[in-house]
Figure 1 (cartoon, rainbow, N blue to C red):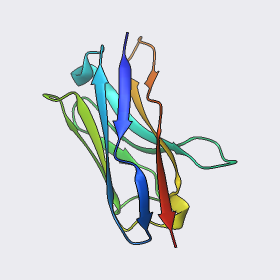
Figure 2 (figure 1 turned 120 degrees about the vertical axis):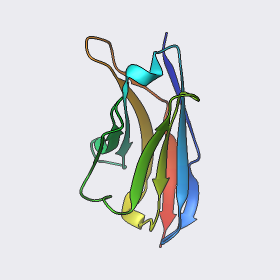
Figure 3 (figure 1 turned 90 degrees about the vertical axis):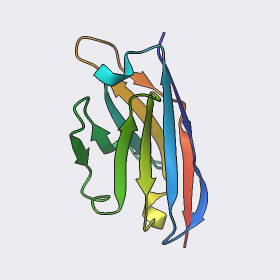
Figure 4 (figure 1 turned 120 degrees about the horizontal axis):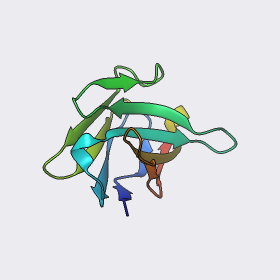
Length: 116
């Protein structure tokens, strides 16, 4: 059974940086598209960034130029480097694993709070 465990969230001032990590187990990590999503209070969960098994990346317009997604297949880990953080980035951030014809997996989420 697949499992995703996020870490690295916390409280940071506007303009600061955080690096989120997501450790995967129980899945063939290198074959999965990995993604970061976020959900702010009272809002729907939204895509932040994805990275395919081949390393192709996709970003939400709101984070382009500020966030970078990367993966280390040897460590079964995906990262989200977040710079120039804004209060609007405050949310619970979730890691996701997708693979064609397989079920999706989600992590438990990590809270990111950006103070103004």
